[in-house]
Image (cartoon, rainbow over the protein chains, first blue to last red):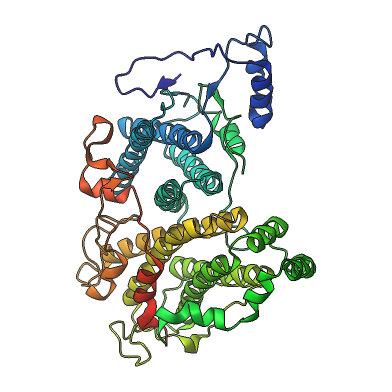
Length: 236
Length: 290
């Protein structure tokens, strides 16, 4: 089991029950993510509706909520690539190692940036998430690159979908600055898997797609042990 | 063509647009007319909300941004059409397949934007291959990129510049589309595709550099992302497309030491792409438009 948290000092953080959690919020959370519905553990962990053992960590509302949402995704990516570089897959070429190291550094910079930016906005950054990469074989090029591709493509759709949820032009620009780098990552990873597949994600109009936070978190939840509550995020 | 005036020229093509937009009833009539067009257009986003917001707020601004984007998409689309059609320019196999894919994506962007502009009550600009001078000579066909359709390495250099510029252009316009969620999202969905194209062109150039180490068009360590303000192209003519990419402070946060970790200026600059203003982009593409 390669589950580990993302804290820099390696301390394990437990999921924190939220005493303010209510039945309404719980239902809102469940409704927000189809995967959450599929995850029976959420239901089995709730002895009573009004006193669930796991409330989910609330991402918050407004622009800060979206920043926390991005911070969560960047935590996931940074943790993944940190593991990739600390346990290189067999047969990795020097060129691949260099590129994947660059990507790790970009994602760690993104992660640290969001934490700093959220604090600078006078808000409290999301806690360090616990991730679960037990489904990834870090010794296998195929497994690592397939996971990387799914994360990068997910990140692109997440930022594309989050743009309209921001009210600050400055934050929208920041999201734009990051999403095109994620798209560059996505294209490179796709090309490493099969050269020429850099933009196979496009639809009939030649566009990438956008996902809502609920859709993104449902997919990401397979790799994140910490339950996230997106119910207070803006929806338009 | 003075590109600084291009947007006002765009508006001149549809002088009635402002009259239409200033009259709510006419706007609503236009709105209902568009409903029929939408079915033909089959564009995958909600035109109802788009048009309502466009007419309720600043449609001329939104349409101007879309026409600006359309201009850039035409530039790219016609460039790749000529390149793919040029005998012996692009090696068969993976290079030709990739550049054909990019050509098709850009052509789809042209069609998408034309449909979106029309359905929003605007008039899309139109360009043909004859509208452009891909040597960057402003119509003289004697600019810094002479031979762009006979020299594959030069073609890739111009392609990289167009893609990286396109990414920066869309990024710069996103705040101007915030009044319309559907159009903003569509623009972002194009923006990331341009980023994918840019990364692949750069990946192709890295491979060419490795195979042709003496070619002066290839400079430094070419990566799928932009390092500092390096073009990695042996031409000063493209530098304006990269100036400003070197910054290492984002939203007041110093990336070089963010979170108590140390990042090189290279990493800090690579991790964030930077926007260009409309005027900056127009100045860059001006030599290519006759």
